[in-house]
Length: 272
Image (cartoon, rainbow, N blue to C red; front, side, top):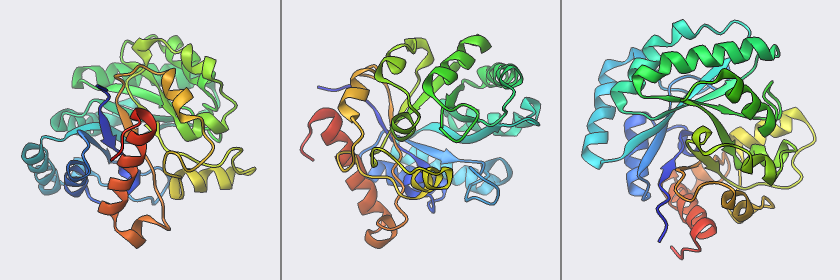
């Protein structure tokens, strides 16, 4: 029997505010949920609980009612002007929610500076019980698995991790051996979805797929079983499967249940 815990990523039901997200995770059979506190891009949908005490209280009530925990918080982007000191409210909110991890994107082309600021973020996050997990994406400064690992290792912080997203892994030129090279101490959770292989030829197409139209596990060409065989069997899996076309049409609860079932079928062979 698998011991793998599942979490429902915010992007799977982006219009759902955090209390709804927690309850949706419970309804779909997940032990945890992700919450987007900051936008992925300027003007993007997010739920700044740092600045909304009533919504924060409602979220905490949903966590108590359902037993669903918060796996990860999104998204901190380390650009050239990133200031780890400005993240205090974000981190404090994460601690209050009992969150475990922060999804981090690397946008600074100066790798030495990015590494130093990633290390500083890790140091700031540690007292809050949070890891900082650097997600490699082919259109960012952290383009592939090897780059993410190099930065995490150079930052040399015990809570600094590498986040493997199946879609980005398949489109970044990263290999299965690159995933195997990540030490267990650098792996805190991974993300699952599916998609066409090869993916779009343009940055715009890659970003659109990632944020708006991913496939259910088993629908595309990503070798998900092979990938997750290279990851620890008990590693939490975040189910991140946005679909601007299908999810609103069938309803987000039905979509979430379908996404969780597909992930379990691929990873466990479960008939659900």
